[in-house]
Image (cartoon, rainbow, N blue to C red; front, side, top):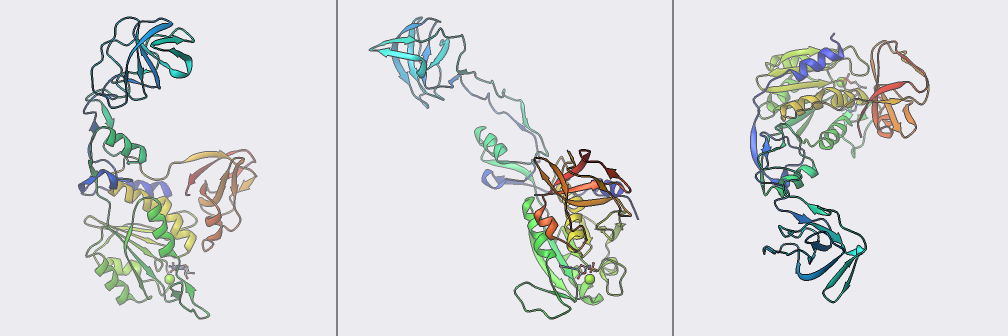
Length: 388
Ligand code: AMP
Ligand code: MG
């Protein structure tokens, strides 16, 4: 059995052949850049007005209005001292303008412009290159594109982006007792829920489950299903059948399919019987079947591997430290990830910490971490990862 830290190190140190692609800008949300983006020109590309108002030549309180410049006008206005020109937000400011005065602080009588106050040099002019200068590093390789990055890249005039590809992900759920929701079930059977939770978690982080199969607790069937799935997937996620019960065939089936074990069993609660393996450039996680265990293992272990595969420079959900609303003693015999809720008045550890219990996870928004034997007083900081 290895520690949480060793398991995470093992995952984060995996190297794979990164695949890259060129995608239309509209489709790059959540993808990581596969190369640096440098500014192709200064931003802004020209001095422009931050206000609707008047561009002024010289610093006075009275001017003569000599014309108008709207956003998008490309003409080159030349002003003389004492001239003002009506200007609008985003319009190109004449080269010899000293400042722009917002229209709310002006009075107009015919061609005469009177200012309520003396302008300051450079007022309300967005200077060429103030945000970015030509050739400057704008976004670094490995940066995960968010909506702002997409807007930024568009403003640089680019409509295509070079990104790292995302893995093709398959999932196999195992268990004789499992019945798909919507079907009738008998006493002794349960509804299969892990594929829904994991598919949702994948989607939450910009990944997709391309294929899902369900198999019985049968060695041959499990082996065949893994073989078939691994013909085309990059990452395979299994659920259930990885413990030590007589009906747990996943580990043996993976071995028979040439998957090399990287670790099996992590000293943690929930999710002790977690398996991670590799075959060439393909990765396999076998998650314990208990719903809270499988989802916790997804957030802590599967996500960083998927991010690594996809070229992200930061792996895993970040840790935050928040004060606890109450005392807490870790009575479990292992370091534990606890279902928790972060609110404005601190962190609450929720009832329903059992590995099979998922309502507390649905109502919570975080996993809090406690070391073996760690005790907290009210107000002590506790480490948390936000999961929703
Ligand atoms: P296992 O890891 O196969 O021993 O399963 C552990 C527990 O999780 C058992 O109570 C199973 O019934 C339950 N379980 C396994 N797979 C799923 C699933 N896909 N959805 C919901 N519960 C499951
Ligand atoms: Mg099972």
